[in-house]
Length: 136
Image (tube, rainbow, N blue to C red; front, side, top):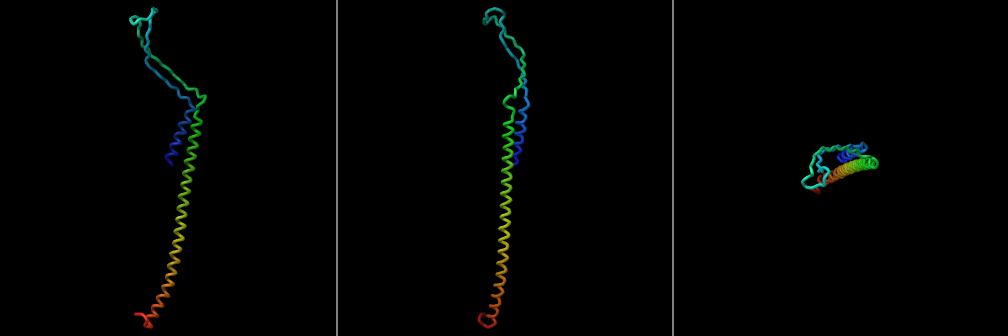
């Protein structure tokens, strides 16, 4: 969940950068055939080579990244909510397990006290029976 949250934060930052136009510069070599005033034939055309430069800047009329930013912000909120849900579920399970443990410990103490009182009485009965010769 933490990795997803970090990913969505990074995606949101990247999408917010779409608001700033990013120019693109290209350069290259251009080749072309030049014919000097006569009808072109395979023998009278001349190939020339030149440099070409271009710069393009996008116009941000429609896509300014606001939809992507909103989407990734919503994803961050969803991941945070899921994280909180899982955390609360874990806390509830631990609390329940602790309550069950306490109940069972109380039951063990009550059982030990019951055995102690019953054991004392059984021991007394056995001693009386032994002293009167009923058991060996």
